[in-house]
Image (cartoon, rainbow over all chains, first blue to last red; front, side, top):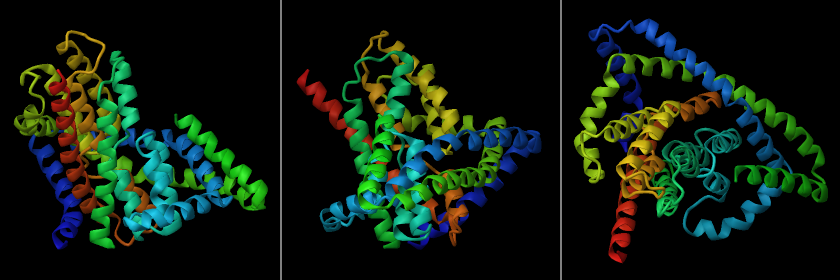
Length: 176
Length: 195
């Protein structure tokens, strides 16, 4: 476990150092490149505002009305037996369908339960470790005109299920 | 599909509030939810700017290309039907590297190019080839080295140590990627048995 924490702590600084040293060695105008790339970051952050507003309002309404609690209480006994917190279910359901929607739910879970709580950590791990199967499927296959998907959807969703279980196991083991 | 989920979730919330007498809370939630989303996005700017800036240096210095060469022997084993010097392999590799560094926006066009090349390898048929399904499986599992956005969200909500998430994400993503490859292989052998 200590190794994983050490990796968490050292990974980003080491990578920054490496990128800067390599860039300088290859005579890249580092600072100017950085600024050019950074501009894209602003665009990206601003462009996700409508996605997040839409989804976070929906989840906030769902939560404030009491419907979310009812659903979570209903699912809790069954899921508790296998060690899955019921609060994570909405995120697990939406993760394969929409990345930005999932981001909204992840933020909601982190804000309600706290970033360092078990549920907050689990939500963050889930968000970071799987991708949006339906998005990849529709965009990639759609763009090149693949009509018959074969086993692609099954494989993708099964992989998602494994990823969710893995996230639960890893986070329970490390932070539980 | 996300359209339905969104509408249904909101309508159930509103309907539930009517019978449950939680209208006041719901009213508040509409405005607070929107406000929180905007605050969050503004908070994301800092880390996205920094990270995408860093990644541009990595790109301009040829580091990303170099990395994809490093992974080539491994990745070409996953795609036995793609000749290792075919452009498809190049696109697959750069798509994977972009995903690894959390460059989702850069990854998408590369992924589409990869699919185009794979389709050509499959004589332009309209059905998904073996390599396409493998490529999709790997993309879904998404091997992530640094979950930038997630770290930014944790920062926004005052995590004691926002980057603590890197380790667990790495472990989870590695395990699920391996699992995805095995699932893909299992379905492939099942298909080929059926003939």
